[in-house]
Length: 352
Ligand code: NAD
Ligand code: IPM
Ligand code: MN
Picture 1 (tube, helix red, strand yellow):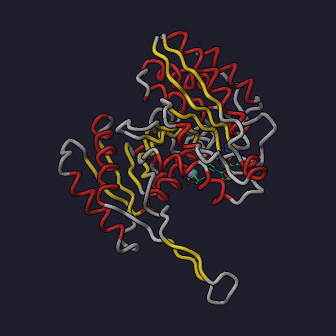
Picture 2: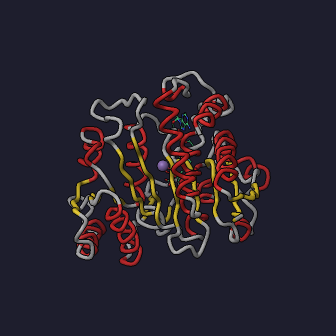
Picture 3: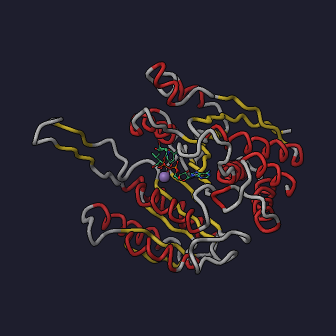
């Protein structure tokens, strides 16, 4: 049987509560589909470690992950350590060192979900946000000067490169050609006058190579409104790093809860391991109570199986998610239920 080496990084808060359910589901599928997963756990790569030792991970942390086939991560960041310190000490270095420039964030409104959005019908809303994951607004160009003085200043340049945007667009257009054949580009070229017109130009250039894809562009502000008003019209939505971040939480809320949404941080060339993690964070407000929704992590595990070459096993997971939501009323609080993380996971495994 094929064996895959998986790095598990639970991280902070509910990260450590949602990874064991994902692992449980993975092990069921390994037995059924004839593959095995060997895990290496990095349990102490977290804010606690930072407070103890001054670093989120060891100095050779990235090298420890390099030989893995994939990384499954919970969440990073917790009160007590500034977010920019914890995130730039663990999550973001992984995305960048392993050139995970595509952040794929699918969203579906499942039957049995009570979406806060009236027009979001089950079966009709099914789209993917393709988020740029290495550059754009999340750049390292800039700085802070004159701290504490009246002339204090903070600057962060948004960096868009032809190579960086083009490779993302190629991924997004290819995905659109395999899905519903439609692509929407998130822009703000009416207000962000240097980078966004460049983005638009590159979209138009790449579109010429994908005549089978119908594409359009929307300003990010109007697009946010359309996510709520007409969520069924989208297929592939391609966006810069920050725009994609915001849109993916919004899309998750449209689908009923931020606790459902998965993410794949992909290195499409497979030179390095890709990383799979729920869209949500460490949720300090509910951490330690055992009530976090595990579906985001479980669906992320499905994306990992797809990436590792087990699409049928991945489909078993998304089918089980659809079934448990449609056919049972067991669900966590964020979805209007009363189940704990463990109870919801057990019910899902019954359907699996
Ligand atoms: P968050 O996603 O952690 O929480 C936002 C809200 O959604 C909270 O009310 C939370 O209880 C709820 N929620 C999130 N996941 C849930 C789940 N699985 N089940 C039920 N409810 C859920 O966002 P935040 O509060 O902005 O961030 C908290 C910390 O997490 C911060 O340190 C932030 O930087 C970090 N963060 C990390 C990641 C990541 O590791 N990829 C992503 C987002 C935020
Ligand atoms: C996400 C998170 C991260 C991001 C933060 C925690 C740096 O919000 O994965 O969506 O903005 O990429
Ligand atoms: Mn986010």
